[in-house]
Length: 331
Image (cartoon, rainbow, N blue to C red; front, side, top):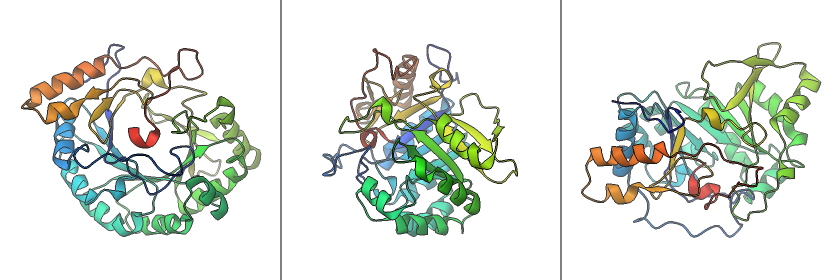
């Protein structure tokens, strides 16, 4: 079968699936304190529908799938979806992004189902700051979940994702480095992006990956680049002079990687987005719930991917905010 490519020649190999728009946090950079109107059960794709999309996508060359939300672990029986997806021939990697609150209880089931990697979103190691940002006093539960994951070596590596925000993140950079090196986690900082429901994002609020790298090197000395050989790698990866630990910087604003982007996204209500900041979506749910066969589903996906945007234009006068917040799109 022909590979899945867009009009700029980018081959699409990575798909993110949001299994729910619901979340048990209220992070200030993602949604209002009162939350957002949730999708109804009828609006959300069933596991059967998600597996069908994934099967067709993998047949077209999708090699990696990441499950996101909202908070994906609030969706009932998620390990069952993991188990079904792991059976897809040609899928190389199946991973999950979570805030960690429900992870301790589900870690074994996820490992048994075949999950290969987990990213835990954790923006502060200080209880007061964590509570201020997430509007939930749950840091201890997240840390307990991380400790629980250590019991399941099949899920590796464990990555910590922190959103980098000026005036919030600088003081904890070295604490996170120490934490990650001690626990053998991969530490990654992601630049703050304009995906907040309150639309209060300002470019001045970004703490860039370059600035964080400088903070680390002032204490630990020059970092050594790690090259994966994958041009679509989103993180600039580094290790330390002693070879212990890895840090990475995802810089979509200061150093966009759009030219190498290889991903698409499926929202919880079945909309295909070819860019995180897309202003248009392709309705796959209607296709799934019609009498269309897999050939038609493939045609619709290929057509949408062919029109994938060249770039996101953040910082440019042509930039348009996404029409959904991060929790609605899928992190």
